[in-house]
Image 1 (cartoon, rainbow, N blue to C red):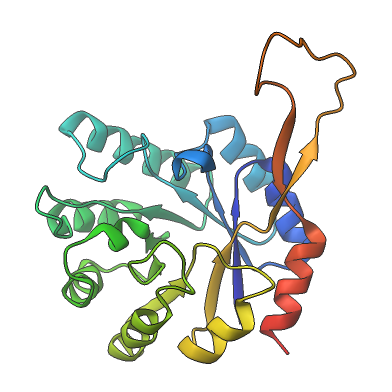
Image 2 (tube, rainbow, N blue to C red):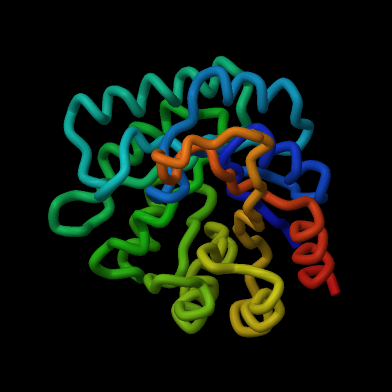
Length: 239
């Protein structure tokens, strides 16, 4: 069983490695669904981690319909990840009708080579999951991160099972969204997936002794992937 940690910082990436995860998806701004992390973050994470590092390539929050300028940014970021020695990237592009943007996806997959490519939860915003599965396979991606087109993977478990059966050995279907110690066994029993994705994060209180009482929601706490939670989830997966 493979556990991928959605790491929103260097601290989360290090926790993923200490907890026994095999791979991370490195990103920023998880409260907005994740965006591409900074050059400095990617470089330092790659230097310090022995496990696989996949980087989210998403220039902004919101939908997955990108302008020519945004697409150019994505290509630059993929080139940077390749130069820094990352193992893979995580992408997702749709057209305005909710189809997989196959032309641009193929271009990014080609650019990323020899890195691996995961197609992220833009898949869950597509207009037809079974058709989208075939399109992503045709684009050359190695994996799809999906919640089964629902808010959480446990809600989308039935479709996840169908996707895994239809995919066979052509591509990996990796459930993600809302996965935790409470539901991981049920999800495993329903879907029979071999890879799972979670942040396993907890709030860590700030070490600041001074807080300006006139300023709200700044400098209070951060959410970091938790080593013990990762170990518990892995233990349940492998039980």
